[in-house]
Length: 292
Image (spheres, rainbow, N blue to C red):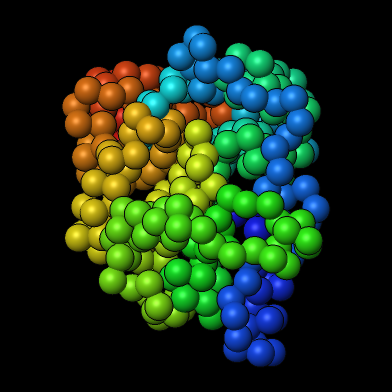
């Protein structure tokens, strides 16, 4: 969830508590919801994300060490690795939270992500879901999705904002997609942990991202919720590029279906890459990760 969306949500919660009246999605910064001028990612080569020789050091410790990664348009890529392998730092660099010491990160073949702020990276089509769900618990499922709707958040536009038929249809489509079609008016705080995870994913989808970064999305879910989350991600494959960081090997197996690439990180760089069966048979991977 972007900082601007968090700010907008905080203001919505204030209005909700004070008046308990019309839900509203205004209050974001003046730049939120508007395109980053002159920046339209070019995916003509079929590649959505390039990470080239990224190095990040914290007090002498290399969290990333000349990391290289390439994600194709519409690809679902699972990334695994032991704690401290650099998975979260990698996502931080892609989304502008952390600036690397060296290297480049490009969205498509023409957008240098290292020159953009976090909100600008979100605006051009990169969405990130953290491990812990961050939804607005006092608002309903519908209100959370409405708040996340990609729209002009400037005060004047928000003052007269009314949902169009197309926007209502889109909210309905996303609620169905995330398995919350019957929960529209349910307060988000009353949802199960898995349902909150789905709701946050739905909030990202309302922003129409081209690339989704998903950090341990099934942590704490029941087996049934994990199964339905795999179905959800597989339905998004092709329409969006997805990078899924996960420790649950059964979930990774469900997502990769025996035919997709899995990347293993260790000590800030790529240790192995290939089919899940291949990396599971890799002696070095077994030694540093799977065998632990």
